[in-house]
Image (tube, rainbow, N blue to C red; front, side, top):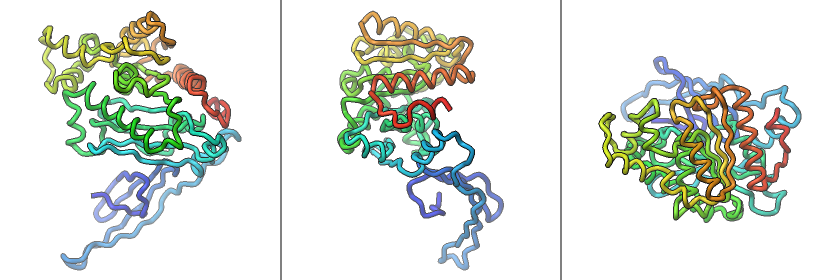
Length: 358
């Protein structure tokens, strides 16, 4: 059971190692750099008394030196004026709304908001000062809502397993309802008419669902999808992890026997099943050598959107895989994300593009 060693409830703790009655842990939060600490735990004097502990700081959380001027200005803002609110649903799903209070005050009106959805799907959106994309988007003057839907890690095994066999249902509803709750609870922070959504892999899958979903599509004015899962029947045949499709789509282990019923089920769980409803602009970023989520579904999705008159843009990165990790390709993809949302959300851009470029 985790102990709140530093008496700080707004961050996260990670145990790095344990030896006897001593342990080393790391602490960080949305506006504090990571720090490392050694804890020495004393043996309880009796069964009725609790053990005591002492904490020694090993690595502090001071601001690094040597940053370029524009980046240092942004970094200072991210560690001093960035605020956070937590939005929760009754089922345990939650999201973190982070924004620069100085930019909000300077604008004198609500900020455009970007909903960021993690992939996995068994991953999580942590509260971490070193989340590059979050810092980039906050530095653009956006309010950023990072969501943890059912299936996210860190919320218990039942919460994790609730997604098995239910993709395209409970995860979509959690994301849509978290956005609605954030808009309702923080209307003075979020401009409801300037809300974008972005995700990669399963986050791209959920982005595709949200912008086409009859109940949620009206929430969003633009979108971006990074190597998204869009067509499960195709992905079942082409991905290097078909067991993911059967586990999350049917809650069954992989069986290579494939039926018409399977095909219909997987189609109904695909964002392609609601593509006809999409009207908001969509940016697609795709690695042509992606084995996890092969790229042809994104190309087909792009041309489908264009045939419907939707403002769509496709960037392909030759020889890049699922994470588009090649340095030149990754920088290009990040800049295209920034420029896309700066334009579509009319972002305040209080620091210009200099910190992003640096």
